[in-house]
Image 1: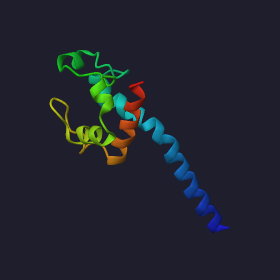
Image 2: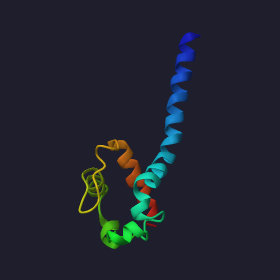
Image 3: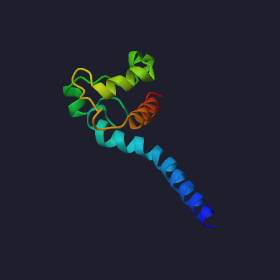
Length: 104
């Protein structure tokens, strides 16, 4: 009986974590990226315009591999700050997957 309760609890935690992860990428984008990159990834914000942010739909960005985008997000590039100390590798991977949805 106790064994079943432990398994059910573990399964519940796993499912909850899995369901929340899809929202997590959108929430991370909204809190960390949207002020420069815009809600639609266009870069059409005051900060984005000031820093000359390129849209995610730009062909050169679309052609970038997930690893390239991961490294840029983690280490920073140009005026974009590094997020390696603020986000886990898994969060960055989820964020890259979310950004890919903005490229369509």
